[in-house]
Image (tube, rainbow, N blue to C red; front, side):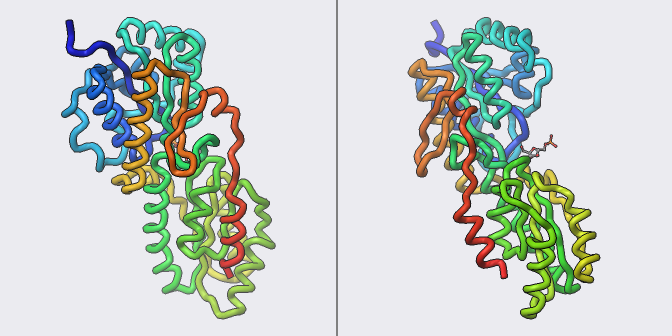
Length: 324
Ligand code: F6P
């Protein structure tokens, strides 16, 4: 008989996020400590459809905690998102004999985990996305690293904007969520921050603000635009037309997804990976790990998927109050 009484699988799915590797590492280590064998599934749910899995050991997750991306690779699988795909993946899990699957990703990945749980394979989701857009959790793995990358880039953009007395419009990621824009906008001292959760009238929220701050002596301006608002090139053109201030637009793009994870991302990822294994080891599935008041908790996947995100109005008001 094997030294392992049982096994679990772990996969990363959707857009990669810095800290996913730390979560994979924690899952593998915590599982092996509980006599569970671990299969690493390659390229998200695709690996369950084409049998692309590897057995993980303690050393297969050495030296990955400090790396961005995901050693398991990731994908958004079209084939899995069909009833036949889910059945095929569940059958494959049964053939491997896994007692559960840890799914590290965002909302789309959790819908896949819910479906796999429904097909008889208990799953536990871990929020891994730079967007911070998982309603049940106050934090998602990768958010802090992405924001620090944005900050570093905008600080560089500020140097050149200042030298030329220009305005710089910077578009940041986040899909439909404005959290990256709001927090980086505050941290880089933006004159205006546009997020999808709030009205974004360019005349009152950008042009009037630039002109008002210009009247107090300010000569260069940073405007942060969330991806969910979009149109940064058009906004830059409009600012130049209306104010006469030379304006440039920068879409930061995928640079925000890479890089060595921050301490916060490594710690949260480790705590959530550990929690996910404890659930599966106790035969509890169909759950999503979440951070609530700084503690790792878990929710039923369907309940988690039905929750509505709450935008941080207080922080938004603070941002509006001080960007003058
Ligand atoms: O969900 C993470 C994210 O980077 C979003 O911020 C962005 O909208 C999207 O993924 C980009 O996806 P892709 O990598 O497929 O271009």
